[in-house]
Image (cartoon, rainbow, N blue to C red; front, side):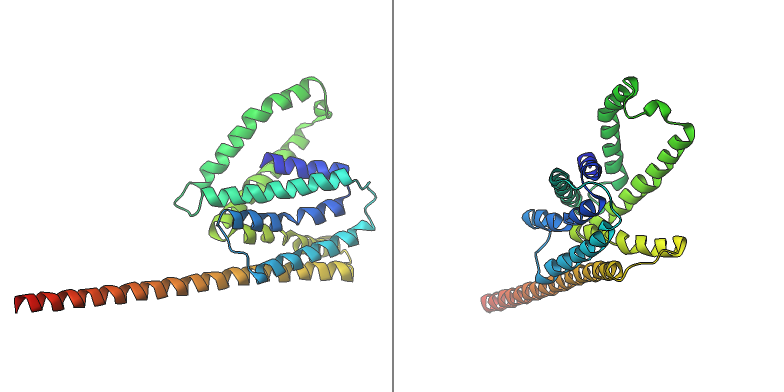
Length: 258
């Protein structure tokens, strides 16, 4: 978890925001590949098409942001963003594999352990940075620290808990694609709060993201319906076979008595 977030934030330092945003949306394809390898999900045509449509939407929004993005572009930054996307997909798949349902483990306990491990491992690094006066930590005011804590509670604790729950309740790919919904939601909030005028290409990209999300969900629902039908057919065959065996047993028993 920490490595994926650290790589993504570091990629923002090395490359443009638009490029990092586009590449980070490849995490859905990594999640689907890892989930298929671990036997958690099946790869269907509609699911792959939904991921492609969602990625094209992110590309449209990212290309639109390129005009106002003055930061430098770096191949190394793109590679780091790609590694972050792969790490995110691996982390998502591991959660679903280790917690297949609500009875597997408490989600609060899991996230609590992750927080404790990160705090224990990273506290010496933060203390070293503070003593050596790196990153201007000495200039950190109480107000800024309070906003950091508030941001951590809302942007990390609450959002990560809801996202982890969605991984268990739906599927890793659906939960990952669902994170892309932040693109149209951010555009909508920007229009309502800041009265920003959205370009036609950006609006098209947001619509593609929503369409891709719907397509992946439809694919999952179709797969669940098929599994239910196969399970019902198997149960029907088993019941019929047991009924025939019971009837044959009684026939042999009656013949023996006669």
